[in-house]
Length: 326
Image (cartoon, rainbow, N blue to C red):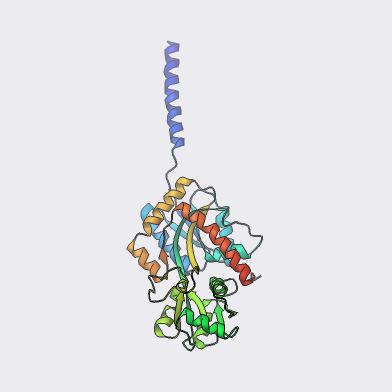
């Protein structure tokens, strides 16, 4: 009797143990609570708009709210540190950009490493820049501009959004590949650089497409080239600089990241939803308004992309002589 009861008890216990083991082996459903998306720049900036756009799509797909947490202070360093230290459970994400990579290169003693401390999810979109000149500049193409600059070494001036900014680094790449000597005039942002280009205080500037599009359409500046490897769907009439300078390319980008050691299953699920969202006509149209082109890379592609970009930016910072503002 006792033997029978013991055998039965053992069988029940075995079933319970097996059931628990199976439950533990299965990944927890994700997401089961709101997700925080840390934005490293100011409200209404490109990363903020892209973050809200993707956050809304994830909320719609999963029924869990994506909460935008703006942390633009100290060039986004504070926000990046918070994201890097967050629990690797998929409930804290951030968006890295070209600017975040530049900051990582130019500032020392940071409390995060953009490559080692994050798990890349997807390269969401890229943004080319436009090289525009004041209408009085006697150049109608990149070839004309190069010839003009070579005929007057050091005479032409270009404005940028600041030392080490993407427009500055792209202009230095342009100088290096074309062999010209033009003078850098740094401004505190792309808007004053554009305004002085329109006013003729500097001859040219390089800026994001939305910032210069209205001025280009109205004739206040003339667009000579775009910095992407090929022509942009947003302004297809503008030639790629690479058509004149083979190998030239400089783009801005938006990559979704999670803290390092976030489970691959969660990273994969996030990647799938991001890629799916980027197929939406509404999302693609909104990105186009920002001058951005959707990508929706695989995890493997973005994991290789970011270190390659860091290495390239490191070379350009060295070439430009840019120093971090202290």
